[in-house]
Length: 188
Ligand SMILES: CC(C)(COP(=O)(O)OP(=O)(O)OC[C@H]1O[C@@H](n2cnc3c(N)ncnc32)[C@H](O)[C@@H]1OP(=O)(O)O)[C@@H](O)C(=O)NCCC(=O)NCCS
Image (spheres, rainbow, N blue to C red):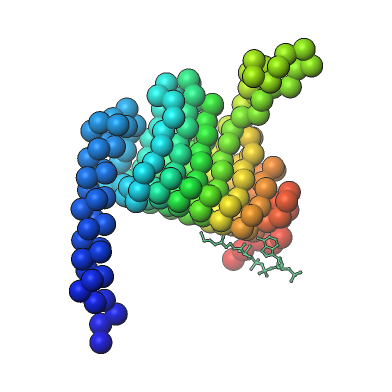
């Protein structure tokens, strides 16, 4: 017996239909200022607070439900082709966040390139931000619920374990995890 029953095809069809309507809405109206490549999948509602920076999403990339792509004035988010950004992820760029092609990002991961500036005489609300760009390489696997802090570079083909807090660079092919994340081994 086939693994798919008629109800599955119906569900798939409805999903595709909603996906197509969403794609039209995001590309033509709500996020017309974002540079979406060909064949981007919009698996649910996405948010792009701030319309003064730039966002470019590569061909065939996947955006899960509840993904937030936040750019401030002068900020840039660049996502390569065939990247998967799963549900509930936040990418926040006051300066620059870039993700290389083929990278997979697990649910509820946060990638944030800015800190509030700490000045003893100024309230945090008014103190502005320190920003440092984040670079995530190509073919990286970032597990679920990871936080990547400002200034971090993650090399190509690296792996970041679930629930990690990444506050230092991870070399190409490195497998790192923990809070703070530490290099565990180099993958084949
Ligand atoms: C990091 C990971 C890839 C495993 O890498 P690995 O090199 O094969 O590591 P191992 O499984 O051999 O584990 C080595 C040790 O690290 C620990 N460890 C593994 N992953 C860990 C993590 N994310 N955080 C903390 N410790 C971890 C293991 O418990 C083990 O500890 P021990 O030696 O005391 O028994 C995997 O554990 C992981 O986190 N995967 C992400 C899963 C996920 O988020 N999936 C969503 C899909 S997008």
